[in-house]
Amino acid sequence: GKTVKEVNEADLQVAKRTIAQRFIVGLSEEYDESLRRFGIMLNFKAKTTAQDRKRCYDKYLGAHGEKMNSNSHPKITETKQAFKIIAKHNFFDMQLYDVSVLDYACLSCALLRCYPSSPLTHIIETIQYILKLFDEQKQVIDSYQQ
Image 1 (cartoon, one colour):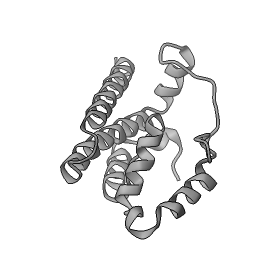
Image 2 (tube, helix red, strand yellow; image 1 turned 180 degrees about the vertical axis):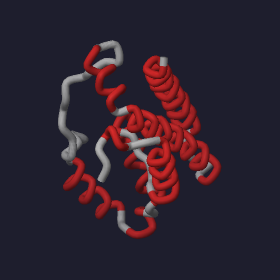
Image 3 (tube, one colour; image 1 turned 90 degrees about the horizontal axis):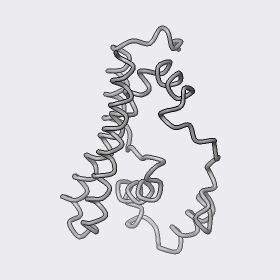
């Protein structure tokens, strides 16, 4: 692999294409909604019973919503110097995150078209939240390009 210093714009473009073509994007900030979407996209309901799905979720994700595959970390806000250093050092990762957030928002629109019975309010709120995240990240990235 390449070191951070060796990564360039061409690598970013390859990563963007790979994500778009081969991955279903989920966001930790939208954990529960992301899991719901994975279930829709992977057609879990057609392949399993409700009891099997609950047993699987309880086993791997936590019976009471405690997110078994999760670690807590200290929050680093965008105004802290540590965040700015990390973001500048990982500039292409930040760009890739922005693309992933946008893909997530686009999936919201696609799910609304495919599943019009989905709770419309929740989907609209999700899109608004994602656009807010996208705008915040863009502001941070723009500040490092100056």
